[in-house]
Length: 120
Image 1: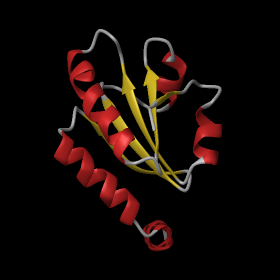
Image 2: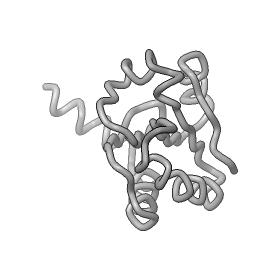
Image 3: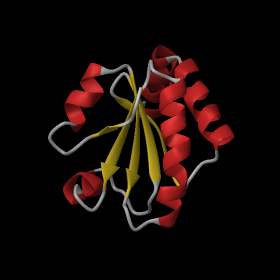
């Protein structure tokens, strides 16, 4: 599956409609963003069960601000509408695959229980 472009208006709907969503915050003028794009696109093709989205931070400045994006590229991963990974910087193919597998294998019931214990 190819990557999709999302906006401030489609962000929440995208999270609602997929169990796992990866979001690449990028800009056309960003060299590392352009280097990461083929790696991200190839991962999207290998994992059709995951939604791979892109946010153009120039066009979607309000969304980038709401996501606290201070450096690009920044990769975020959501599982069951919950942010489970956020990291600035371009990953290589191996690093991205490791993150994808970690998110796929994440037990959200355990993660929610752990988060509850930390708040207590």
